Length: 77
Image 1 (cartoon, helix red, strand yellow):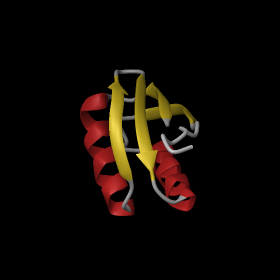
Image 2 (tube, helix red, strand yellow):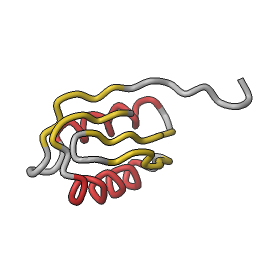
Image 3 (cartoon, one colour):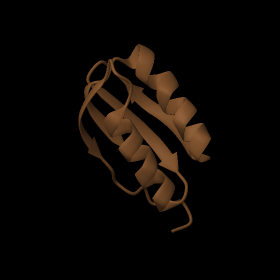
Image 4 (spheres, helix red, strand yellow):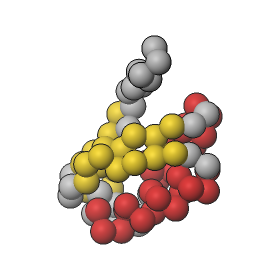
């Protein structure tokens, strides 16, 4: 998942971690900058959809313009 916008990393990363944990999603932050956050996230599609919706609304000091999702192929296939 790639989140683009004015994402103020200092407040958004802890928010992402909390909400992913609440949803029971496995995640790892791959890249974090003032205009882009990239993360690997795994779990049921419905919960990832919920995470995407939550990130689009995010904390008040964050402005998410776009969220891009792309499946990552597993090593087994």
